[in-house]
Image (cartoon, rainbow, N blue to C red; front, side, top):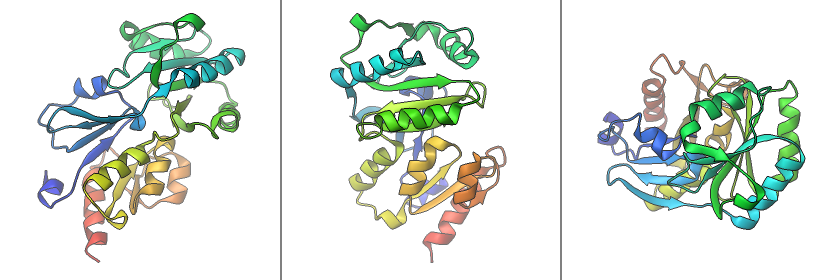
Length: 249
C-alpha cells in the first residue's frame, strides 16, 4: 500500500496460474497487476480483467510434444491463459518423484495427453527432471528450442531441487509482461524495479533498472545481483527502502 501511495505501479510476476493465485490472495490485496504463468498472461488486479496473453499455437505445440516424447521426458502442457491451471501430461513415471508430486497435487485439473488430443493452443510446456544431470538436460532443451521459443530454467516449488524447464512462445516471459505494463504507463526503463529469487527471474532481473534478489536466492542470482534479507525476513520491505533510496538520487 505504501508503495502505491508513493505512485508506484505494483505487480507480482509468478509462475503460478491465475487460478492458483486467486485461491491464495484476497481480492483486495494491494496490487495493480498480476503477471501469471511466468508471463503467459497479464491480469488487471483492480478491475479483475485479463488484459493480455500470448499462447503457443497448434503447430508449435506438436513440434515440442514430438521432441519430448522422442526423448522420453516427463512433461505437462498447460492450457491457454486464463485456464493455465488445466493441463495435459505425459504418462505417469513413478521414478520421477517431483513429476508425481505435481500430478498428485494438481490431479483434478489434468489428464493424460496423446498425439491425437493435443490442444490448439497452450500457455507453456513444463518439463520436469529429477536426475543428477539436470543442468545438462536444460542445456540440451535450450539448444533444441531457444531459436524459436523462450526456454526458461526453474527450480521445482514441490521438492525445492528438481529442474523444471518451461517452454513458452518467444514473446512470453516475466520480462516481456513487465515491459508491456511499463509501456502502458509510459514509465522510463530507468524507473523499473524487480525482486527475484530463482532462475526463472533472470530475464526479469536483467530487464529491470534496479534489480535486487533475496538472500536465499539461487546461487547464480546471488553472484550477479545485490541482496536484501531472506524472503522470510521482510525482503520486500527492505527492497522498497533500497529502491526509494536509488530513485531519489
